[in-house]
Image 1 (cartoon, rainbow over the protein chains, first blue to last red):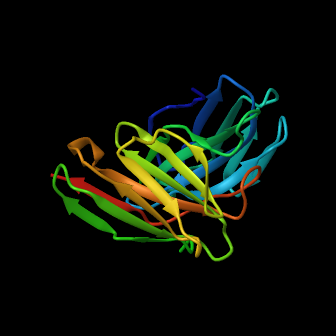
Image 2 (image 1 turned 30 degrees about the vertical axis):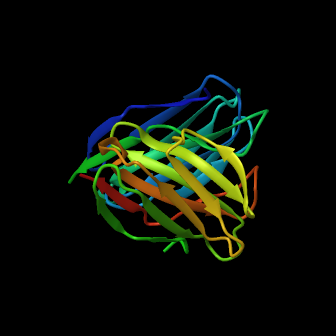
Image 3 (image 1 turned 90 degrees about the horizontal axis):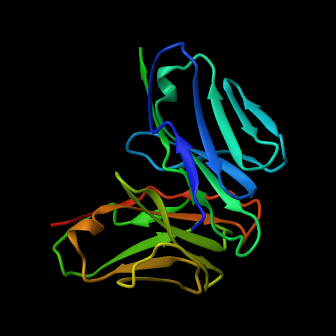
Length: 113
Length: 114
């Protein structure tokens, strides 16, 4: 079936270090979304990317969508303890039934103060 | 607060039993999605309803069923429960059916099967 692979599964950083998580799909995505889930919480929408090569920024977070629309990344500059949580990408595959999002397994980020 | 409500928050039951999880979407949202989250499987899409009709199916077991009512709330029914069904079940809602819809997640129902 259609899958979205996300790496790494875990990442532990010192506060102030940068962090990046990557998502990859074997097939073209019509769009990709990113969600953050705090420990004990529920996924919260962060952003959506639609265009090939699109780059969006939210303060210290930078989101990229690959030129081929098969991969995406989330980069956090100078992590803070408030960044702790699991970051999920979720892609909507092109063609066929375009209704559902396929979530990556997420990257759990822990930050050492 | 996303505006999506789920009840109950916690549910503890025994193997072989049947339970119903309830979800109320955000005001104005017509789509409801159900997800199962476990430690080893991540966030698994189960099923989507749009305005009362089933629209997409994911990895939903035959023992599980769902429906969306005229008032747009949704229920997920889990029957013949097994230990492996223990997980966090999320409901999400969105405005429309496809495309650029953002999904808003509820707080989840934690199901424990003993």
